[in-house]
Image (cartoon, rainbow, N blue to C red):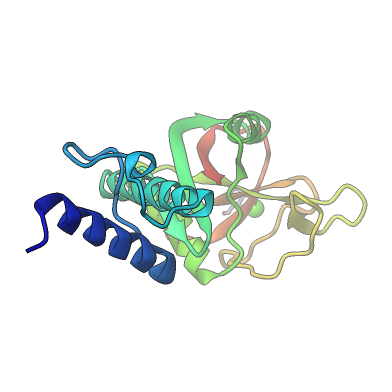
Length: 192
Ligand code: MAN
Ligand code: CA
């Protein structure tokens, strides 16, 4: 008969191999009653396995946090991007500044799915928002803030109509866009 402690050692060894194979790991160490792997003599162990487990745990915790934020309507995820608002209305420059201060930038819809995610936030706050699109200094064309040409547009009917005097862009509650002066108070929506 195998002793109880041998059974645990074998189970943990099997788990550590499975972890490496599946790139998916439960918390092995740090559980009450289960010794740290370091303390388990004779187990196949490596720094790589420990790091792998630590990263798997971090990823798991991050996914849990994102799920909570999404549940509370604080973030919207599209592809690899996250959109969120601070709920504040301000001019274009201040909106951009608060996004950058938080490590992001103003949200600019680059496809229909992103446009909908941003529109959902506009609807949530029932406030038109500035998007991260503005008129280029030289060309007079609307561009992303990094200077790239737009690859998706959703102008409202008859927009843009500002004839160069409306250099920023707002999103209406139906998700369509209007060129608008940059000194209005509009909802801040950031991309992270
Ligand atoms: C206002 C402004 C303009 C917009 C028109 C649409 O004048 O918001 O930017 O084009 O309304 O009627
Ligand atoms: Ca306009």
